[in-house]
Image 1 (tube, one colour):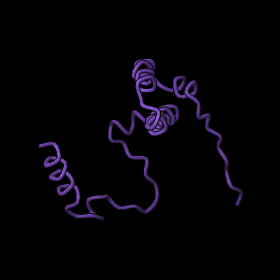
Image 2 (cartoon, one colour):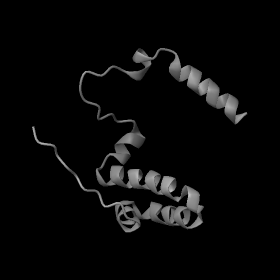
Image 3 (cartoon, one colour):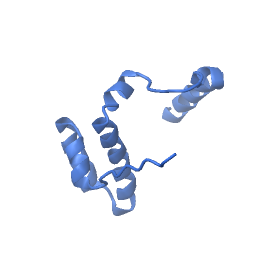
Image 4 (cartoon, helix red, strand yellow):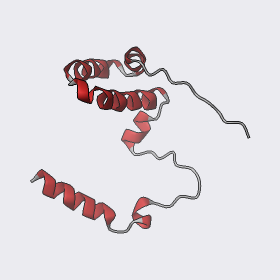
Length: 95
């Protein structure tokens, strides 16, 4: 079986081109105001968002549509009670 390779353009220009117009200004602001130590992390977050957008998956993810394949089981079934513990922990951190 041959390995399928995909080349993704990891440039600021490519991210701008893939994002919807209403998010480009937010991306530009994030890139211009980010400290040099955090630049790579911020770029990666926006890069992943742009890749998902270009693949047509971002709208589905936001809408809760799953593209999972295979013999997976629901998260709540695999880890009973975890979601409640996580929400409780998030509430404590926010307080």
